[in-house]
Length: 189
Image (tube, rainbow, N blue to C red):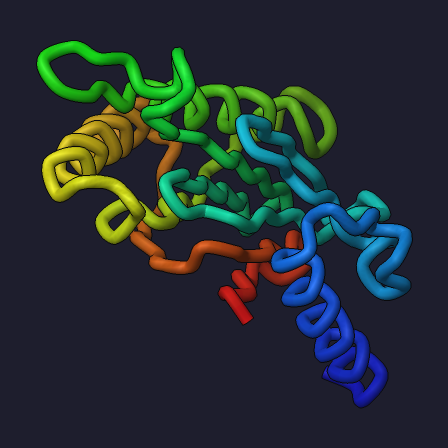
């Protein structure tokens, strides 16, 4: 890593920390982030390629929410989802004998499907590192965290059966960036 790269990385980390705490500020306010970061808002997901101008993709504010990052290390394609589980808002958590977190599985499938279409000709086969953020320690009840963990485990098992997952990791950060050039996850700073 060159001195310029490390200076840019330090500036990106600093700006992301400020941006994640002041989400009402537009990214144009942050000179190092605005040209390289695709910020994912609550209940949204997107996929980028290292070849894109926006090769960092990330989110913040995962309190009662969960996050997903997927990354194909061979083709340098990555995606992020920010999934809200706010029990105060209708539809975010469906009450069925407690709480049901199937939205996690839905977002995971959407990310993989979108990422499979990125990266060149359709002959590419994508395999992903899969990261689940703020699953076991979120601002939810212990029962809700356990139920969400079960959904995550079922989702990963299904994706492994479909031969889409290389590696799986739980992460505790409530804000993160994925660098699709390197595959590095920059944690809550």
